[in-house]
Amino acid sequence: MTISVPDTVFASRPRHAPLQARPCASALMIADEAGSAALLSLAKLAPELMPRSTILICSGSDATAAIRDLQPARLVEIGARTELPAALRGLLAEARMGLQAYIAGAEDLIDQAVAVLQTAGLPPGAIQTERRGSPARRMQCVHCKAITEGVTSDPYCCPGCSRSLYVRDHFSRRLGAYQGVCVDAETPGIVPEAQEISQ
Amino acid sequence: MTQVLRLTQKQPVSPRITRFRFEHPEGRSLPVFSGGAHVMVTMRDGEVLRRNAYSLISDPQDSSGYEIAVQREDQGRGGSNFLHEKAQPGMMLQIGAPVNLFGLNLTARKHLMIAGGVGITPFLSQLHEVVRLHAPFELHLAIRSRNELPALAIPDAAQVHVSDEGSRMNLTEILSTQPLGTHLYVCGSARMIEGVLTEASALGWPKDALHSEEFLAPAPGVPFEVNCARSDKTLTVGAHQSLLEALEAAGIDTPWLCRGGACGQCETDILACDGEIEHHDHWLDPAEHCSKIMPCVSRFRGALLTIDR
Ligand code: FES
Image (cartoon, rainbow over all chains, first blue to last red; front, side):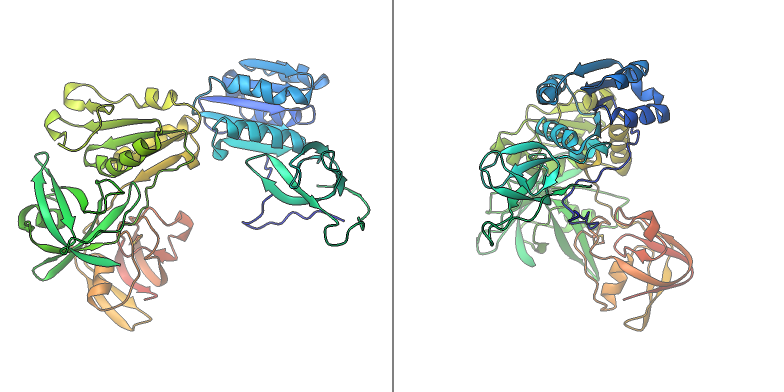
C-alpha cells in the first residue's frame, strides 16, 4: 500500500517545501543530522541570517562541525530527541514576534517541533519545514490517545492499547501528530500486512 | 438585510468627528454583532443616493442601538457632509446589517492595535470584546494634534501619540517587543497601513498575524463608458460616481457588501478592454488585473470596456 499525498486545498498533510530565507528579527533553526544539510543550503543562500540565528541540533555528530562553521549567534546541541520539547521551550521563553522558525529533518522531528512552536504561540505563517531523511511519523492513536514517535510501518501496533492502527494522512496541527485509526474495526481480526511508509 | 432606523443622537466629539446613534423606531432590539464590524448607511441626498460604510463603535452585545463616529471629509463625495450637515435627530435612515471584515483573531495571545486618527473607530467595539475576554491588549493611537482626540470611550491604557507635540509612535520598538502569539491590527490612512504592514513584514511578522482595514471611498476620476454585455446596455460613469453606482442607477443587479474594495463581492469579469483599468481595490491579485474589475472602487480610462454584467 502506498500513502498518497493529496494535492488539494483540503489536504491535511503538512507540506514541506525547501526552506527559504525570510526577513526576520531573529531566526530559530532546528534540525537533525539529515536536516542539517538543508540548513547549510539555507545559510549559503542567506548568510546574513546567521548572526541572528539560534540553531538547535538534535543528535548530530559529523554534521555539527559544519553547522558550527556557519557561526550562528547561538548553537545548542541535544543528544536525544526526547530532550527536544524542553530544549525548545527553554529557547522560546523569551522569544518575541519577529521570530521565524526553520525546521529540517525527519517527519517526526518536524511534527514535534511544530507542535512545541505553535503551543508557544508562534503563528503557523512563521514556521517553515523541509523534510530530509526518514519519513517516520509521529502518530496519535485516536482511541487511547497514546503518541508513538517514529512510526515507519502501516498498520502499526499501538503501544497504548494494542490495537492495529491504520496510518492516516489526517494530521493534527494542534498535536503535531498524524491520526492512527483501528484498521480492523469493521472486520475484527483481519489486519492487512504491514507496509513500509514510503513518503 | 437592511432596516430603517431612527437617528436619536448626534453629538460632536472633536472638531471634525461627530457621533451618531441609531435606534429602532419601535424600540425593538437590533442584531448583535462582533467587534470590528461596520454598517452601510444609505442616504437619500436630493437626487443622489449615497452609501457609506462606517465602523460600529458601540458595545457589540448592546442591542438597544448602533453608534458610529463620522469624520467630515470636505474632499469626499458628500456622504460625511450629508451626515454632518443635513442629518438631524428624528430622521430615518437605511442601515445595513453589521458586516465584519476586521474581526479579532480569537486564537491570539495578545491584541496589538494601531490606529491613525478616525481609524480608532473599529477598535472601540473590539475593545468591549477584548475586555470581556480578559485578553491582553495594547492600543496605540496616532493623531496630529491634541484637539483631534475624539471624546469617545478610549481606554486609559491607550497610548496616544501626538505628532504636534513630538511624541511620534516608535513603530520599530512597538513591533519588536511583542510576545509570541500577538496579532497586529491596523486601521488608518492607506499610507499608515502600508507603513505599518511593511515594517512588520520586514521584522519577521507573518501574514497570518497581520490585519488591516481601510475604508476606501471610491476615487473620483474622468467619466468613462462601459458596455454591459449581459444586460446589453452601454452606460456612462460620471466623474463623481463609481462604476457600481452607475450599474445600480441603470437597474443592473450587482452584488456588493463593503463598497470599499475589500470584500470581493462585486468582482466582475472583463470581456474586452482597450485602455487602462485603474484598480483601487485591496482584493484582486495583480495576476487578475487584466481579467477582473471591482466596480465599487475601480475605474477605467480608454477606448472600450466591456464587462460581464
Ligand atoms: S463591494 Fe466589497 S469589494 Fe466591491
